[in-house]
Length: 446
Image (cartoon, rainbow, N blue to C red; front, side):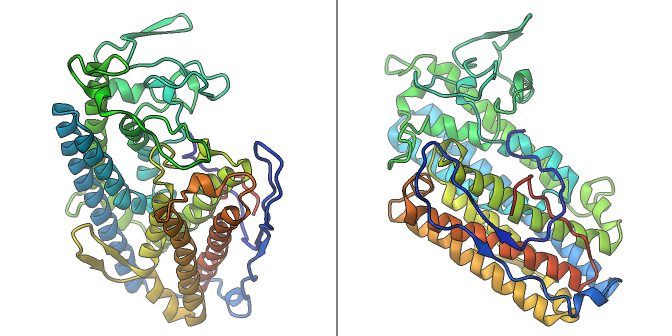
């Protein structure tokens, strides 16, 4: 699905250079950064695993425990979101719309920390597109502004499922009268276009906020609560159908998360957790490190930040309708740090903590462990600046605007920190004998 799949490529993350290729030619601050080359004085001699197998097994087992906790929290928060949406649909007031929006933002916190379990774990990668594919052509789902610019060649860009009980596509006519979870899932990538996203967090986000028509100016989407009114107060037509769509797509989100929780539960012989723990410890460690590096570099630094910055494109920001992008980026990076340190703070305030990659690397090469810990902390500091900026009224879509040198520099600093962090992940892997990690770059040049 759109912006969710990465192609493997060899990486030694040494430097990053970003060149402006956005909507207008504007002077940009220098974005070139050099990440110190990984020291090979100790690593090159390590051609075999240097970890204790029993300790490594404990690390992988705790990794599965953390995955279960994160997905359980994602499910719990999605159910809270579902309850808030039910309240909105029962009584479509501004207060209830605001509450549903707040519940959506809260639900993103654990989910974004779950994405570090992608890439190495096929069960997550094959599943996540239905929950988090983006950007989407919102004209597939509902009404849009007349000046809306959709993906070129997308046959579903103006389908407006909410307004139309059937859809003609080529020589086919699709029956959309009853909006079921199965139907909405089948409409993803309609007509072969990855921009057709009918399900997941971003479809719900669009239905709660509507389009953000502010460009690089302040402000998020401003959908009125009356878009869900079931009487004469209905705005923008088709309110009953819009409510049905929102209720259905939210039910699918909850169902999808229930499935993934089941994949990580203990005591089941045929789920993914059992498969993972049945593999060699080395394979488990490689999956952990590969997921960390691929989310860090190709996905977060590349697809979610570099693309938007280079093109000065608000359409390429992750949570574009709600202006919640800063939080999504921050908690993506938090997930990477969680896996390395073996700790996760649950939404109820409790902590999950156990055997960690950090301890395993430290036992073999304390310098490599400290280097990566420092880089993870530097990344968190850099991404905290995105959060602080948003909290002070300047969101990610404003930071990436052409001509905003100061804002561009804040985003660039985050990208550079993620690139350096990925080098540290590779060094940590090498320290325990896991070589040629090759995190995904998503075909970006770093």
